[in-house]
Length: 390
Image (cartoon, rainbow, N blue to C red; front, side):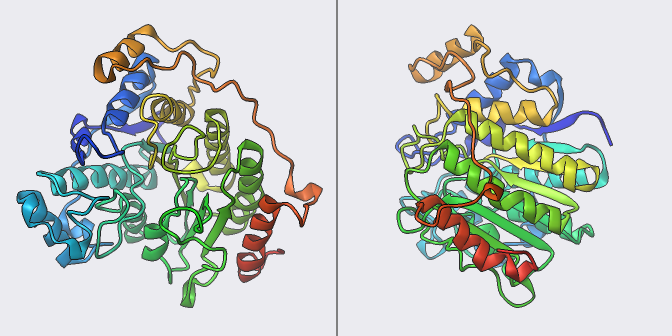
């Protein structure tokens, strides 16, 4: 294995742009890469620009007629077919949409190929993590489902056990749907409860079907969950599943929209807790995955100045084995870039000033506590299907 992580990056991914009024502002990607460079992390990783995913790769997950519909909308946005989720409020059509969506997908697929073939142990594509796209339609700001495509490529290359951990505030519904009946892929999603947030799926009872029964695990967190509850839920579910499954590759999705400043959701997680989970994913990859194979992706996140760049810069640093000190003062050059691009003042440090902690599940649980009820519902629904104690 190479000693250096790979960071998948092409400036053209910032062309994934639904328009000035859309919450998914591509400035979040440009500012993240700017902060990575300001901390010198681009020198601690191999920065790689991969080719766009071709049609044969896209068809590993997406239907041929859907890819054709995206191409048509990309060439003429006025012709977007809403039957495919295109040209909607969530997913407005824009010129070049197919090309840039395929480019982002290509970065995630290339990351998966690199870790599988031993070119690197860790690869990051923070422009990826577009987990809502379905085989036959766009959904939730996502055109092509790059996490599912990366996993499908791993299976095509011969992987027999791939674990996917999704900590975005929204349920990873598209990835779950792609592998609903496939026992080779374990999908675990921690997200805000479907009663209060899009896409209204991800109930604990959703556990897969057929040969894949027990291969889908969902933790539906109460609105308002903060650091202690979020971390408690993660550690009450994820490590035990990975210890049992022993994946050959770990794919993780790190949507930053769990943050208390995010405008589109209702969890209350800090940057410091997000960083803690990233560190845990890194440690779990080294503990339970042969060769530490880890593909880390971005995802949602709509506090595009204060949160997203800091969160994903921490992710890059952790994957590079060059973690950024949370107490460090952010370089003035990056804050100048923030102001030049957004006319906003950027954050001063790489921390929210929190010291995340949680109570271990093994220490016992409170049946009257809403967070513990959520964890227990997940364990009771999914763990026995995998031969584990609830």
